[in-house]
Each structure stands twice: as structure tokens, then as C-alpha cells.
Image (tube, rainbow, N blue to C red; front, side, top):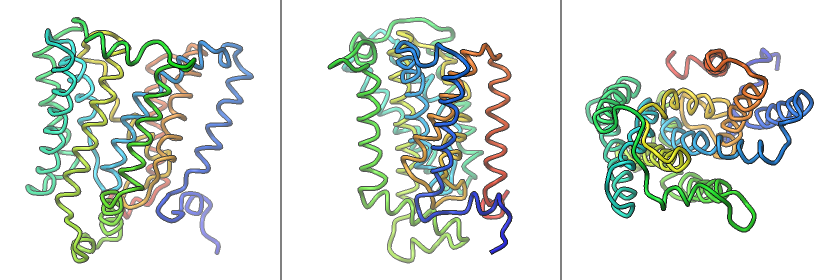
Length: 320
């Protein structure tokens, strides 16, 4: 009954995790920014906020697939940059767009196989992949340049039915992720695998007939494909290839997932919590930009938030 406040605050609430507090934080930040700056509630800024938040929302959702099974993927930022570089190649859009998802799936499958078959720690495996993908990206596009297909640009820019195109991107991504995580056997298996790992019984799900290695590999495939989707969105916004556009996205994505109540030990989390966590970070970045806060200070703040959130979670379960 007399548990420390921090422990009670971060204690799991079923499989969904604790996400109400991040939602309240999101609302509080919105209120503060609306009072501090008159630019925050303008239609132009809100449209920019949605467009700025979408790549992080997409990437964080993909990262959640891996974190739910007790892993991490540090290669998502390089996959985003790689996607923009491939889309800026001199080839038709109907060739380039499918190609980036095939390549992303191969990257994710490689990560999954290294983790499950070679028993390499996810941080080491995906960090190595980050360097490999980043190297290939800089070979394809050493500096920003090129032009992405018109179909990619038109899918991101402009509006439809009076709503910005990023709104439809968000709706489609959320529906797809909800179906995979909460409306399919695949998602159920991911939570079962992660729950066993968090409890220290890694073979629990396998003993009930769940193909753990295959599902963990597919989680990494999903994570990379969502990162590629975020890369397509960013390519449509910047209309060119950029080897640096995905820099530090892995940090932001992990932070967003953790803020949203997903346990980094695995087994506990929710899609809506991850979305709220991503929106909290996006809103903070937008507000700090409006208040002319240095981008270097913003990065330091995000690192501090990640450290705080991880510190409040159960470090013993995470093996930290």
C-alpha cells in the first residue's frame, strides 16, 4: 500500500500501459503554449505541427512493435535517410516506392535474424545495421539533392476535402497499426512474447506454441517498413534525398514510445499511448521553436526526458 509515488505512477495498468498521464501532459503543454505565444493556435502553425509530427508518429509506432518484444531498433533513422536517397534516384515512382519497402523489409529481416539466430543484443545488432545503411545512403546521396517522384510529393502536399494530406496519412497508419497490434494474432503473439521476456521466462510463449523467433523477426520487419513509410513522407515534404534527414529519429522514437507508457522491458504498451507520446515530443519541439530555443538545447532536453522515463520504469526488468 505504501509504495513510492514514482513506482505507483509508472506501475503497469494491464497490457495497455500507463498513458493517461502523457495525455494530460500533452494537454498541459498545449495550454501553456497557447498562453505564451499567439502563433501557436493559428491554422498555419497547427497544419505545420501535424506535418512535423507525422514522421515521428509513424516511426514511433514501428518502434513499438520491437519494444513490445523487449527489443530496440537503432537503425530506423538511417532507414529514413536511405528511403529519401532511393526515392531521389532517376527512376519512375512506380519502381522506387515499392523498392524502398522491399529494401526496408530486408533490413528489418536481417536485424531480426541477427537478434534471434545469432543471439546478438538488439542494441548492437541494430547499431551495426545503422552504420551499414548510413554508409550505403551516403554512397547513393553524399549530399542533399535530386528530386523525388511527383506522386510522392502530391501524396504529402496540399489538402483533400478541406483537410491537410498528413491527416489522411495519420488515419491510414493508425488503422494499419491498430489492426496489426490489437486486431490480429500477430499482435497478440508479440505481447505474449514480450510479457514472457519481461517476466524472465523467455520460453513461456514458445511453450504455448507461439513461434517466437518468427514473430520477433516480423516485428523488426514491421519497424523498418514503418520507418520507410516515414521516409516516404519526409521525402514528399523536402522533395529531395537527404542523407541526414533521419538523424536522431531513433532517439525520438524510443522516447515517444517510453513516454506513451510502453515498458521497455516488453509486454506492455498501447498504440494510443505511443501516439500521445509522439505528439508530446512534437508539441514540445514546435513550442520550443516558437520560443526560439536552440536546437542543441532541444536535443539535450529530449535526452533528459528519455533518461527520466527509463529511470522511472523498472530497471531490474529491463536488465539495466
